[in-house]
Amino acid sequence: MSALFDLSGRLAVVTGARRGIGRAMAEALAAAGADIIGVSAQLRPDDEVADAVRAQGRSFEAHAVDFADRAAVLALGADLARRAPDILVNNAGTIARTPAADHPLEDWDRVLEINLSSQFALTQLVAAPMLERGHGKIIFTASLLSFQGGINVPGYTAAKSAIAGLTRALSNEWAARGVNVNAIAPGYIATDNNTALREDPDRSQAILERIPAGRWGQGADIAGSTVFLSSAASDYVSGAVLPVDGGWLGR
Image 1 (spheres, rainbow, N blue to C red):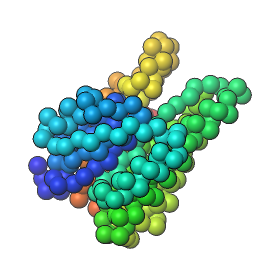
Image 2 (image 1 turned 45 degrees about the horizontal axis):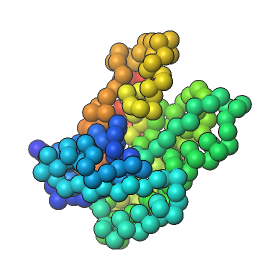
Image 3 (image 1 turned 60 degrees about the vertical axis):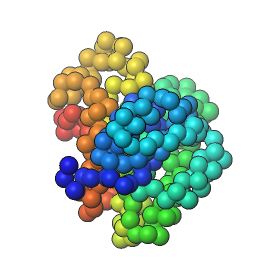
C-alpha cells in the first residue's frame, strides 16, 4: 500500500459501526492498518464487524451507546479523549419518515439530537487532543439531502444540511491547527434506512433512473473515500463535502 494511504499504528473511532455504511467504513480503515473503536446503540464485542476487523489483524473495541442519550455521549467522548484517537468518523444516524405537516415533534427532536447535536458534542471532546498535538482527521457522514430537500424527512434533511455547514465551520477553525474536517455524502446506498424505498417499485425505479451509474450503491462504495479522508493523502483537503453517489448530483 502507498504510504499516502497507510494507516498503520492509527486509532480510529467509527460511530454507527455495527452495520451498513459504518461497518464498511470500519472494515476499510482496518484494511488500511488502523485499529478500530466501534460505537453503535446495540454494538456487541462479537458482532460481525468486530470479527471482520480482527480477521485483518487489527484490534476492535465495542461501545454500545445510544446517541439520543446526551449524557452517554458525553461520557463516551470524555473516555475517547483520554485515548486520543487519530481519526473520528461521525457516522451514527437515524431517520424518521412522515410528511412535514404531520411530522411528530418527538421525531424531529430525536433525529436532530442523534444526527447533529450529539455529533457536535462528541467531536468537541475527541478533537481536543487532536488540536493539542496538531494532527487529526474528522469525517462526518453527510447526505444527498445536505444538498437537496428530500420527501417526508424534514428532520433528517435539516440535520444533514447542518452537518455540511458544521463541517465547513470546524474546518475554518481547525485546519490551521492540523485537524482536517471533511464529510462524505453517500448517495442511495442499500442499507436498512432505505429498505422501504427499495421495496417500493415506483420509488425504486424512479431513483434508479436518476442515478447515472444505474444501480444502488453498496457500503463498500464508501471505503475508498473513507481511507482517503483519513490518510496523509488528504492533508490539504479540509471543509469538503464529497458526494459518493453514482453521479446523482451531477445529473
